[in-house]
Image: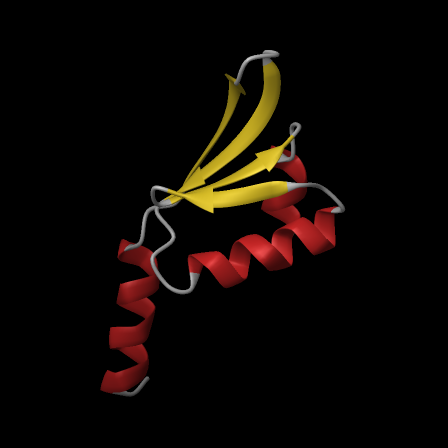
Length: 76
């Protein structure tokens, strides 16, 4: 393995992504919150919303998807 590939691999390993299910908002709806994505989070949020067929937003360093999509996110 070349040194450049090892460095890229280590960067991916060191990135910690946290996925949680939370009850948010005025009407106590379930949301999936994804934190820790540092590279193009707005783009990833948009792609996830399209792929999962759900609404959501990106704010304060978090991708927030409407409803429980933890298992679906893990398989993406």
